[in-house]
Image 1 (cartoon, one colour):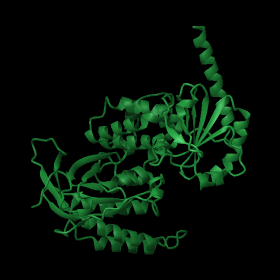
Image 2 (cartoon, rainbow, N blue to C red):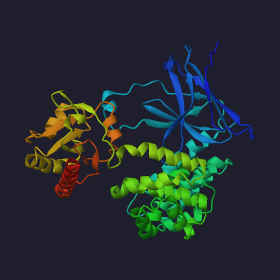
Image 3 (cartoon, rainbow, N blue to C red):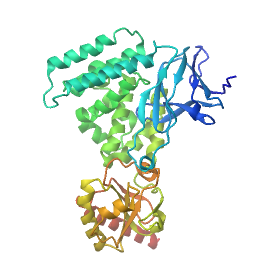
Length: 470
């Protein structure tokens, strides 16, 4: 007898509208004794995971999820090596198939760039689902892109339109609004990255006065990644002045309301948040200002979806703000001796994240050596390599005297790299003697780091002298 055990997550607390139940079930014998978890993104800008249901897998391999919802939205099963996507539809039942359980290899565990294999979950009892429609569309889209970009230096306009028409016609049978919007914005994304040059016009025509699709991945991917810097590109002079003077969210929103892209308040606020989000990671000098603006926004934002996104961003970003405490770690060196960042309290620390495969790292290492020799008592240098291989790191450092440099391996799960939000190699931070972050995205040794360090060091000495007098 099948033993179905599930935990239901309520997606809507509305008592005015009766929600539908989406039932997802199946048999996955290789997961027997484990608990499967179904997630969605609580917002599509920060991509913060949110568990919506979980189910134990019984001794016979059976599992069941029940999800109560009024909306159609994308969910996924995180199976470590695999990520399986499914579109939740109110009132539907899906009998699904999962891949055989696979254990991640050691080289994948230590690789911070490891990406699970992504796929659309196969549904056995119904082939007229939004999941199946998106799976078919994405396959056609991929083929179309391959044909269009055979010669990336010259895109044939006629071939482009032909491929777009093939994709559109082959999926014209669907009337589901979620799928139709997904297709619309995926095709628009393709145009934005090929033939459409005026991004401002794209936003005005396709977003400014249209409903905001907070739960549609294609809509949000285009708005965030393809168009998410438009406000600073078009109105940058005004926005940078407002940021520099800590004018606050309300002033920024009111100022933008005078421009044609931003007459609609709901869209204006959502698009402003997206632009601030991208600017936070693009321009380190304004990180603190953007945090202040988004804190002030919580007094004014009424839309629940935007408020969730803002709170997710603030929760995720506060770790890496100038003046905050640096995140401690305990990592091994090439001789397996363990070192913690807190061991270096009382000194300035120049923290660098390196990769043996990075050409810029290979260029910087000689400059790092020279820097370490100049200031061994004033400045401690720590290099954390993403690799967990002593042989590779020793090969990279061949003929380099690391006497004044602490060389460490990343932890097995790459947590330190995730904690410091390392996206490229090399990446540097400066930490003051109290363990506080003094510079985020600090200059590299070839980018006049010494001048920046000298200024911060002098300011630190003056501050300490004043404290001692008091």
